[in-house]
Length: 258
Image (cartoon, rainbow, N blue to C red):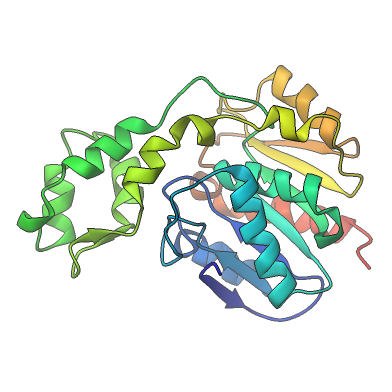
């Protein structure tokens, strides 16, 4: 089963699902704040963090992983919040196991295939000679050439276990499955809808949520609401954490969850 961190208590519980190259620890601050009102479980997805490594990394697999945690830890179901890759996994879960999902929050992603790739970051991490790294600062300096953006580099380095000289990411599998990650299982999800409450929160400066993506979301999630956070990009929860947290809380509080 997936590794996860648990915060707080109360119903209905909330599951948080990180995106590509992320982990539960990236969501620690937001998880603690949201746990003031309810139980929060933040998971490490397969091939990330402290969760098991597998040869497959499909959205069907990821949704099954999430279902297993909910069945074990939140048997009456959970509100599910997913960002980017985690948002797609959460959508597939809602479309295939709706009885487990009391409500769905999707952060800056749509149920469509994207043409971009994140393979350059896998290559940058693989290029780092871990035998020469004794501190996170060492890794940061070396990776400045391959990952010039300070914020992105700092985010990636959160998955570096300096002491063990290893990445907490299954880079080989993530590279091989990149097209799957940026894609969407259209054939499997064809005709499927989720009738529960749903909201799509995107960054106003992000290009991940297009008009076509909105239409695709409405097709699968007919009750969906749509909100944008001003001044935020794709990493809206990191760029505007207070605003993101407020949007999540406001939406949850407005629902009549049983």
